[in-house]
Length: 323
Length: 234
Ligand SMILES: Nc1ncnc2c1ncn2[C@@H]1O[C@H](COP(=O)(O)OP(=O)(O)OP(=O)(O)O)[C@@H](O)[C@H]1O
Ligand SMILES: [Mg+2]
Image (cartoon, rainbow over all chains, first blue to last red; front, side, top):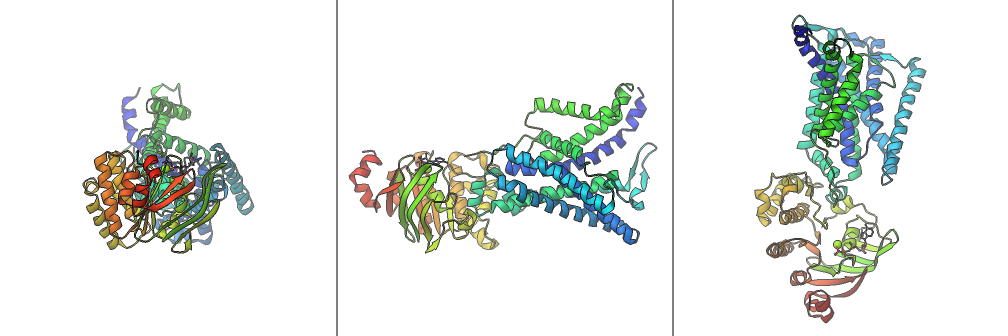
C-alpha cells in the first residue's frame, strides 16, 4: 500500500464526495418533503430533477446559438439557468401532483405509487420525444464556459475548478435558504403543521391543498437546481440519467430519516462521501481486487449496515402521530 | 348567531346524526351533552367543515356554511378545539400559537392577542419555546384552547376540554372558559362532565344517538329528573 498516495488524494476525494453529496442532498429534499407531508414516495422526482437539467441545457444552447454565452458574464448566465431550471422543475412537480396524485388521494397507498412510476416513465419518453423532434438528439452536452473550467492548483495533487466551487456554494446557499424557509417563516411552519396533522392544520385556516402544492413546488425546485448543477458539473445528460441519481438520493433520504429535512441533507452528503471514497480507495486498498466499479456495492453495504443499526435513519424518521 | 337545522351526517352506512337542530345565540355558552357515541364530536366537525352533511342546514349569522371547506370557515370566525387536542407536537408552543393566528396579517393585533392568551394561561408563557409534544396533558389542553383563541374567534367550539385532566385543572380550565366568554366570545361546549358544563352554560342540548332529545336552560336541565339520572349520576 502506498500510504503517502492514500493520504495525498484524500482532500481531492473529499471534495468530489462533497459535490456529489450536495447534489444528492438537493434531490433528496424533494423526496423527503413530499414524504413528510403525504407519506408518499414521489417516484417521478428523478425525472423532475432531470427536467431541470434539460431546461438548463436548452437555455445554454439557445444562448450559445445567439452568441450571448460569451457576451454575458458567467455568474449571470449561471444564475439564469439555475432560476429557470428551478422554475421549470418546480412547476412540473406541481402539475404532476395535480394531475396524477391529487385525484388518488385517499386511495390505497400502492395506487399513487404506481401512478408515480407511470409518470416517471412517461416523462423520460416525453423528454426524449421532444428533444428528438427539436434537436434530433436526446444525449445533450452542456456547453462549457471557459471561466468555469479554470482550475486552481492548491498543491501538487489537489486542484479545484471554479465550477466545483460554484456548485458547492450554490448547493449550500439553497440548503440554507430551504432550512430558513421551513424553520423560520410562517409558511414553513404551516408546512410542518400540515405534515403533522392535516385536519388540525385546516382548522387553523391553512389551505392544506395549497401547502401540498407548495411542498411539491419547493421540492421540485430543489430537484431542478440539482439538475442544473449536475449538468454543469458532469456535462452529459440524457432523459434517463435522472434515474440512478434519483434512486441514490431517495436512499439518502431514507438514510437521513425519511420525512426529515436536515436528515436528507446529511444523508445526501454521507452517501456522496461514501461513494467517492469507495470509488477512489477500493482498488488502492484491495490491491486492485475491487475496482471503482464496486463503489455502489460498497456504499450501499455501508448504508444497509447503518440502517440495520438505526432503522429510522441517522436523524430518525418523522412518523406522523394520528389522534 | 349559529343555527343548525335538520342536520344529517353519516360515516359510510352508519348514520351518526339524524336531524340535529340547535341554536347558539351571541354571547352565550351553550352546552352539548350526551353519552359516548351520541354524535357530539360529529356535530362540531360538521359545523367546522371537517365533515359534510348529507342533509340539513348550518348558518352563521344567516350565511350558510354547508359545503364550505374548513379553512374558509375559520375565516368566518369559528375556531374549533378538536377532541383529543390535536396540537402540533413537533412545533414549539409559540409556533402552535402562531398557527392559530394563521389567517391573520395584523402583526400588532396578533402580538396583543398573544399577550392576552398568555395572561389567561401563564403556564404557556413559561414554556413558550418548548416543543409542544413535551407538554403535560393539561398544558396541552391549555395550548389547544389558546391556539384557537389566537384566531380571535367570534364562536369557539370546544370538544371535551376536561378530558383526561385532574379535577383542579378541570376547574381552572372551566374558569378560563367563563373568562373567555365574558371577553365576548360565544361558546359551544361539548362535555362528558355534565355537572361542570351546566354550571357555566346558559343553555344546553342533550343528544342521544344522533338526535336532540332535550333542550332547556342550564338551570332547567340541572333540575330535570332524566338528566340528573343519566348525566349527573343520581
Ligand atoms: N370516522 C368514523 N367512522 C365511522 N363511524 C364513526 C366515525 N366517527 C364516529 N363514528 C360513529 O358516529 C357516532 C357518533 O360519534 P361521535 O364521535 O360524534 O360521538 P361523541 O358523542 O363525540 O362521543 P364521545 O363522547 O365518545 O366522544 C358513533 O356511533 C361513532 O361510532
Ligand atoms: Mg366525541
